[in-house]
Amino acid sequence: MSRKLAFAVLLLLAVVPSVASAQTQFELTPFWGYRLGTDFEDSDFNDRFELDDDRSWGLILGYNLNRHFQLELLWSRQETVLSEVRRFGNLPLFDLDVDYYHAGVSYVFGAGQARPFVALSMGVTELDPRDPFFGNDTRFSVGLGGGVKLMFGQHFGLRLEARGFATDTNSGNRCDCYEDEEDDLLQVEGLAGVVLAF
Image (tube, rainbow, N blue to C red):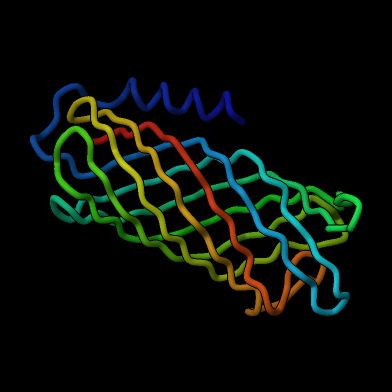
């Protein structure tokens, strides 16, 4: 998966025109990161479960409304493991893919080489157990983050960001194996991405 994403970045760099208008309209940011999770309790069985911390990757597409405001579409994926929390160590249960599909807005401070920003988003979290016994589940989620864009030219830069996600586990159909009626699923992601502006 990493090689395919790296190839996509190189391909995009090759097709970005060297001459463009004075004001760029779009930003495409493939990124790599690391996501930390929390444990949560299953109210039916009074057990606690945990998502293992693991690497993540994804894509952010931004549209500049003006100098400061930007609309954003975000996809972020983590391939992790669901474990049952026990007194003398966690018991791994099965692999679980966690995908965030969000739309939101960011506010960028300034227009120099270093551009701090804050971002707010909402959308859905897709939980996809890689186990034939359990099915996919999709839940409402929100995200809040901030960071800085370091632009090395008009069309190329680096995005550094930390973002927190909160997923509502009370809505829709629930699978008791990995969700809790009382505690929302919380995760924090740190990421670094290549900004391609055009």
